[in-house]
Image (cartoon, rainbow, N blue to C red; front, side):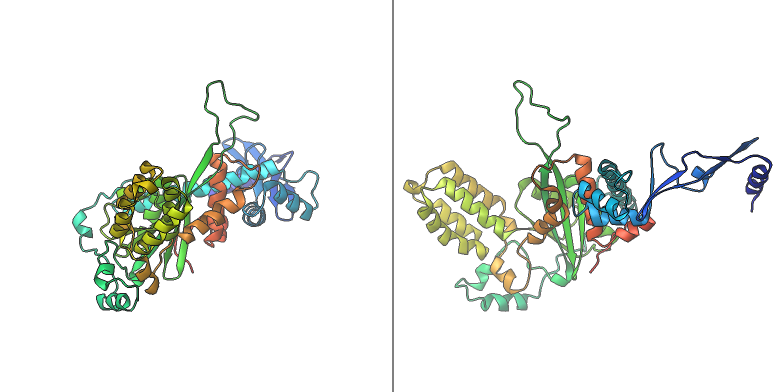
Length: 436
């Protein structure tokens, strides 16, 4: 016992101890409780158990236990509405009157999510500082240090043998003359990135657009990233592409994945692809693959608007899609350029599709060859993470969200999905590691 503690005990014995009227408020998994706290005041001594023994609370604040947060937030809020969660926990605790209100639970959940976001931001900055990156994710080290990193591909014999046995009717040389490399899955990291939007909450209830102001729906946009390596995965969510890609770079650095092939899978969104190329310009071994489903969807939509009727559209699709499936994008473009003018309804839409294929030429692989080699062709897992982390909870009739509330809840859901809820609630830390 040090001198200060001795003085406090001596003063406590000599003076009458003041008991706080309301007590220390604790919201636990078995109920709400008030614990008596005490305060000693005197010469050069001011000791209050509500602050010096227990975590300090605001005037109307409650201390929420680990068990309460696990039940109410991790098992409750991320799965169902705040109102349903409070009804359930108050019923279980026999506190329908005087129990936790759903507004209070919502505020506490948003605060918990905000703490996760702040932790990720600080952890990202710390990782950047250790690996010669600026706070905005730009590499500040010597480029020559990364010059030895090259694309890790499957053996040429394996690729050629698969191309010969493909039975596609195209020559193996044509199939292999593709700008997208055939990466070695054991030395690659698969990354799917996509945006997900939910309806934005109005600033004020019942507010209407002013005269002359454009009226329309507004959305809150979050970016979801899924990282896969050796049957292990990790999900990251952030407020926008730039912030989330910063988290992603920090995650790759923290898990010592430099040297691997960073293979991105996207839906072809130009802004997203440009952001990835710009942000990872420092790394010599990364690539982007356009998701096959979205490529087919884009071709169908543009040709429907460009050509006269579905019969003509389907005829062109039957001719060009096999070329795209086998990575022969130049031949698919030639098919579009040779369409008879009498079949075209809107030349501008047709030109737009041709420009789209030209722009994404370096992102369209030989999908057929990749499929037979057991490699990914799709960003479907990224779409699934959108649903798991955001859409399934936040996209229901009548729901609208603030930026803070949407991202906070998505961040808590990601913590649960990554199996880090106990680490966060008990130790206030995230492992930030790939997990099975």
